[in-house]
Length: 378
Image (cartoon, helix red, strand yellow):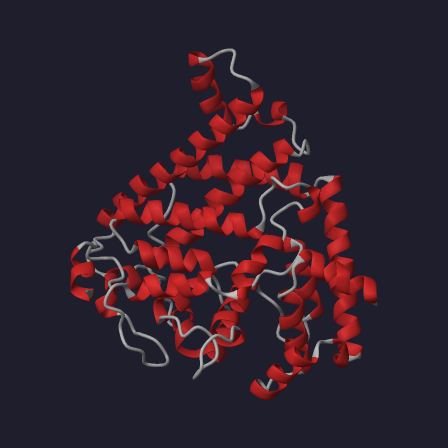
């Protein structure tokens, strides 16, 4: 099974045969690759289901059609898989990393993460990628003989987008590349770009749908104007709602195509012919072309100014900060407010860690509505 899967991949892909394996030894499945099994384990977690009720930009009760952290994750996984296929690298690994990359996200999106990180500033901080790893390694309890999901080294490493040296030393082998200046796998690199492609384009779509962004405001963006003109030439009477969706669709396709073409050129330029070449390369190999990078950066700047800093979104941000900060303070003052079952597991299994990490685990695992409900009890 492993050798057959290897044969379909490029020389620079992560192949099942070179995997560093799992922490706890398991029998190999005859019908699934090791990375397929990782993907399926992630999908069946409680943490994955909770993403449905965690904010992407708009809180859950703002509307039924806005993206949540779960729908965003599924979109990132789809884009990752598409890019991986075009580059002949490991689709299953890319998808597994994509599905797990946001498991550690707090309620209320990035506002929640910033608030929790501020609360944890004297206790090791909070970063959602590190928390995602913590969930799959320790906090998900689904197996008889070990905590966590016992995922492969490559999936676990791929989740870590960034990591400072102090944290890397603490995490050990899974974060070793940050200590020895090694590149992540191509599979992990494409997930980072798939994430960016998904949230830039879909946040733009949701921003227009919510009327926080007016369509007229985006028409000067080069990447938008490029496709608006193309579409209007063929159909001058197209309704605006359909036009927006068609522009977004073409933008995503354009970004994926550019990323694949430019990455192929960089593979040749850097003489990448093996997985080890990927690891040893001084530069990130997966990248947009210079022109597209600028267009994408302009889109990000626009979203930051016009959506993420919109007055209504800032109200949600301030509310998130208040809820997270006050919950943290209450639990720090009286740890018994955290349910017995959660405390018993954590105190028994993670005795060496301080209560603040336990509180961080509990709050970061909340959905938006559960956090609001618990806050009302204070």
